[in-house]
Length: 279
Image 1 (cartoon, helix red, strand yellow):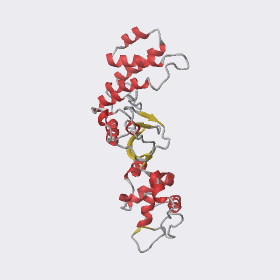
Image 2 (cartoon, helix red, strand yellow):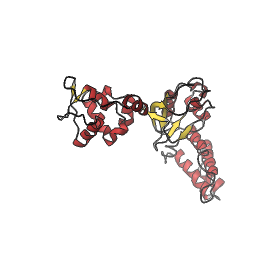
Image 3 (cartoon, rainbow, N blue to C red):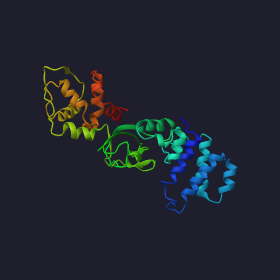
Image 4 (cartoon, rainbow, N blue to C red):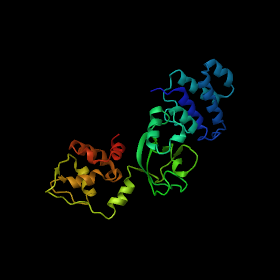
């Protein structure tokens, strides 16, 4: 889907906060971005572009990239970039940042739907520091939270400021352990730390999964070696596997989840983990 001009310009404006002024060859990156914005805003023709920047090859090339996008010749132009200024996001999604507090996942979804950012909506727990001055979340050791995961694995979070009692800003950065998709870190600590995987119980509901040997080895390891010799699971064991951290299931996670769904037990898999692995 083609991005509209307002979003492209907002993304370009945000780039000035993330790229150095000069590149290693001494060219001015920011002047190049300004040229692209001008071309798009004014819908400058090729002749007008050459008249203005023919003496600077670097800026001329940047300006022509923007012209190519206007001509429909480069649909990927700025396609994976994200808007990074709060004012631009407010204008594009039509909701002032003063109303974002407590609506983290909703705002993340709206930003994705509007093309403000490209990535996947994630939901889980925020494990970072929560300010004592944060009225809504003060006193909590952690909080439910929603954000966007960028294609490169970085975090794009328009509402993190709500935990920090600061003015609104867009957080773009690595996940240093503050973002717990599906609450898997907390679940491991709260429910699995010190608990033993259930042993096979023939008296309970039985479930057959269709998996290859390598995936069965992962299931057995997840059950601490308690897999029945016939490779059948009782419902309690299946629940243990279905709620395991996908990281623990490794490359087998997608096949194991698909097998659980095929067995009619998709409901046992937490929705956040299903989205993380399958979508």
